[in-house]
Length: 113
Image 1 (cartoon, rainbow, N blue to C red):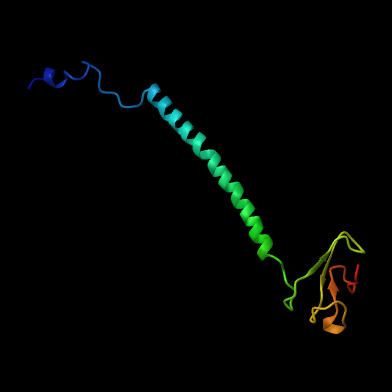
Image 2 (spheres, rainbow, N blue to C red; image 1 turned 90 degrees about the horizontal axis):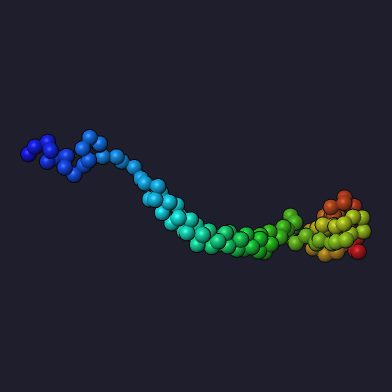
């Protein structure tokens, strides 16, 4: 086998060049753009739906209870401000004295609106 037979497939004097042509790169960029155009809106839609679901779960499960296990009473508007948060005390009933007394966020004994 001669040297001429080995180099017949290549151009004489130029080594084979590795790399991509401009057309190949443009085709790949176009394909990536199409995929993002189809998949992107669906992903963003799922993110929006997940925020709605998270808010619903937090509302359903994040109602705080007082130390006696009773749900706090929220009043808006309140007598002394825009809102009032009230614990009904150990007995869970309006009014009371001692540990059974109502406790509010303004520091005074809670009263009925």
